[in-house]
Length: 265
Image 1 (cartoon, rainbow, N blue to C red):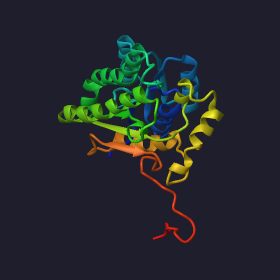
Image 2 (cartoon, rainbow, N blue to C red):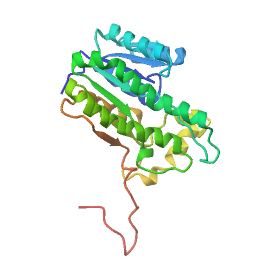
Image 3 (cartoon, helix red, strand yellow):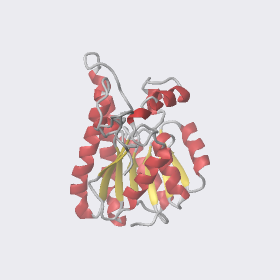
Image 4 (cartoon, rainbow, N blue to C red):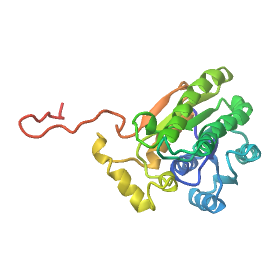
């Protein structure tokens, strides 16, 4: 397994949520991390929190010019590049009858095409280092949530993309994997209008706790732990690792009373 130190990693969408969690964990363990996002204030705050190993580049992943700047900044900061984490993304929800085709295409451009293009720009650097690419999927590919068809479709595309790129880039010594997070409180739900603030977002996700065999929702840090493994595991590629507390399982609470099924072994 590759060491995190020394290690240079580019994390898109690293100013908040899962991206911030991944960047924080890598930097804490000695990696040189470059985070990107569209809001300078968020990135400055994130870098200050993460520490000296963190550098940021302001940019939009849908812009080819900005993508080039992100790669250049990461290579300069880390004196090379061993990892790329495609976390940046948006959510679009609505009835299939009412969705605007332009909005759907914008979502696919952000969630799928941007990461595909950014990966292409990183190949020459990752080939030199024997590095890895990580895509971030979603529990939406394991559970069906009405009204989330555009988002679920984009995450399904990402998961298949990771497998195809694993086959394509494997001969170059580059590994490609996908982590599948479950119910984790991040601001993407607020941006999508599912909650108006962090407290409401947490309350909404917590309503799903009974559907988790482990009895709770997750944290960005727990997604980061799985992500760090996938970035470093030298014989793992084309994998989709679900980190969701068991939410994807068809789980039913055991009955109480005379028909109670014991959960003990």
